[in-house]
Length: 239
Image 1 (cartoon, helix red, strand yellow):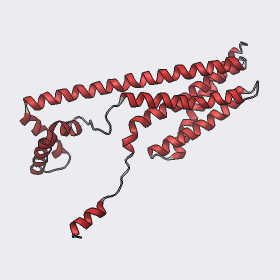
Image 2 (cartoon, one colour; image 1 turned 180 degrees about the vertical axis):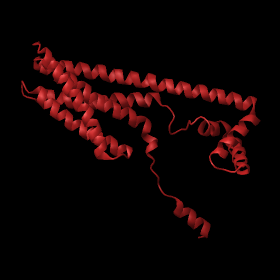
Image 3 (spheres, rainbow, N blue to C red; image 1 turned 135 degrees about the vertical axis):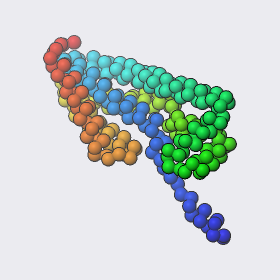
Image 4 (cartoon, rainbow, N blue to C red; image 1 turned 30 degrees about the vertical axis):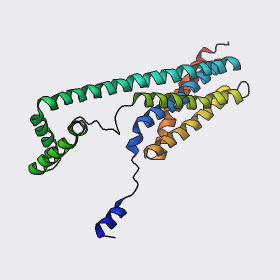
């Protein structure tokens, strides 16, 4: 085997980049944590006010359905707005490339000079990338838009709604399995455990320190639970 082919064969290795999952991961983490905290907060708050087990369960289920739909709609609208903005910028860039190709080439060249290339090499790189795909080069290097980080509204909406429903299943299950009169306590404990696991899993998937991620999510979730329980005890309304 020739040396060049040998080196080429050994240079191939699988690479896993976590930025490839940043779009759906952000939506999924937000959805899961919101599902756990929101529905658990509703359940604990209503149970602390003295509501019956049936009322607590129905309130939790209603919160799950409403929350999942709200998360999906919110994510879709938000990310779609980002996608629309990206498309508008691409349309502008496409028009400028057609009307002022030389100015756009110089703009691309200056970008590479500011990144550390000498002028001659920057000009050569700009020419070759422009010849290959001018719009893609400007989208990536001028606008910061790439295939990996591009907005995907439907993907974000589905990930958020699905994760919210899965997260909400934890407080709903604890409501079903808890003895009468202990729903608030048991739901609080299982929710804190669930938040810890959720935070750890999200940190692992994103390549962040697992303990820090778990503690961060658990702290804010426990704070929300305490506020809900306090509100329920404050009113102490029997339903």
